[in-house]
Image (tube, rainbow, N blue to C red; front, side, top):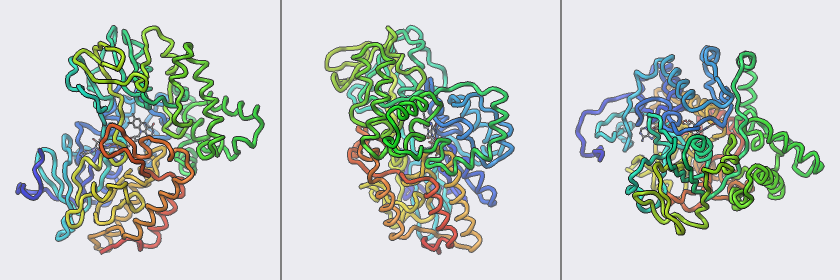
Length: 542
Ligand SMILES: Cc1cc2nc3c(=O)[nH]c(=O)nc-3n(C[C@H](O)[C@H](O)[C@H](O)COP(=O)(O)OP(=O)(O)OC[C@H]3O[C@@H](n4cnc5c(N)ncnc54)[C@H](O)[C@@H]3O)c2cc1C
């Protein structure tokens, strides 16, 4: 149990800024604040840098963003010296990249590993934050920056008996650092979201027998990954400035941008040809570069959904299995689209079985395996690909208290309320990088912007000897209303998913909320730039 800050009298180490998390956000935030000459400490629960790419070591883990579009863009030298080996790099390579970044910029000396933050309390008398770690140690700082990740709080399914299983069991986001051998083993995978899909297609290559427990099928599309040859490498590097400019201009910072045409403004033949072209292209083009109305017009969405359903039927030999793999409760692209490599063909293998847990619910995990309503299965390994308590989950796991001891958890009981996704009224001097209500998309692009905005605000304050910044209630109300209004008319907001705050495995997360900003990234940045240009008048500075 962590000691509470009120009773623990151990001396407090003092810094200018405490950053929680050493993923892409935390590393870059540290780099930028050091440039201001500030004393910064990063507190990281894991034993190394990398965040998502440190924790998610499951087989098959890799990018859905093009590797090069995911890179940090701030250092020309870094861009020049790093060679991505594939268009969509696998986790070990991305972890090597982030480790290289940490070494190159000598970041590790300010990062404290094995340091899970359990509490962060603001003290108005000193205008400082006091932070408590799981081991009871404490530290304090003027500013607190949360870089704790939108997808970093793993969730286990709420199934009885999980702790009784005698074989090997692992959550994909808490994967062991040593390789797991599946050869000849009876393996279960629970979950078929983006992570489940990547895991299944990889494990099926070597497992003796694989049983997939599926509750909600997702609309998957081909990744079309390939190695990057020398000539392509040269072209990518020469094209970095234009590529990052393009990412700045697109809706969600991906290389792909929606086609300006409406789905029904073209002939059926043109439509089919366009869908075929997108299905044959690499990456998120079929989701992010499709007709402009597929995510807003139900009929347009039906058209692309029917197209992808046809593809599934063509690729899966057993028609009954194919039907089970076709989503019925949401249309294409209204949940995050998993990108796959021969995922559907896995179900043609004789050693792979699909169990629809809507038909035969899992009753319990047993010492030997899994018991459903109809059958008992024996396993050597159970893999929980059951995802994350997304966006607000990592906040909920810390006892964050602002003015007058107000808890962030209570403040957000009915959904997050933020100012630009960066601040929360009543929590002065706290900034969120990749918190709720900020632009996500191709995430490092948004991270770099968020970090630079926060850094500029801190610089502004230091230059004027200001020591306190808080969001104003009217600013929070306006931004929260704006974020909600952006969600109106989007088909994705009429669907249960982590993007609408639903997680059946987490108590209290059964009501839809608007947890993410769904406007365009350029519009988000324009609004934030405007606030900075007017001297942060919308914030309460003192
Ligand atoms: C499997 C997977 C694949 C993904 N693929 C893509 C992709 O292709 N493209 C894309 O744009 N995005 C992708 N994402 C999203 C990904 O999370 C972001 O791209 C990015 O890594 C977020 O970086 P971050 O630093 O903000 O958060 P994270 O990488 O999640 O890092 C947060 C860090 O904070 C630490 N932390 C959290 N709470 C505490 C605490 N209380 N105390 C101390 N430390 C704490 C965690 O240990 C972690 O190291 C993927 C996510 C997953 C899970």
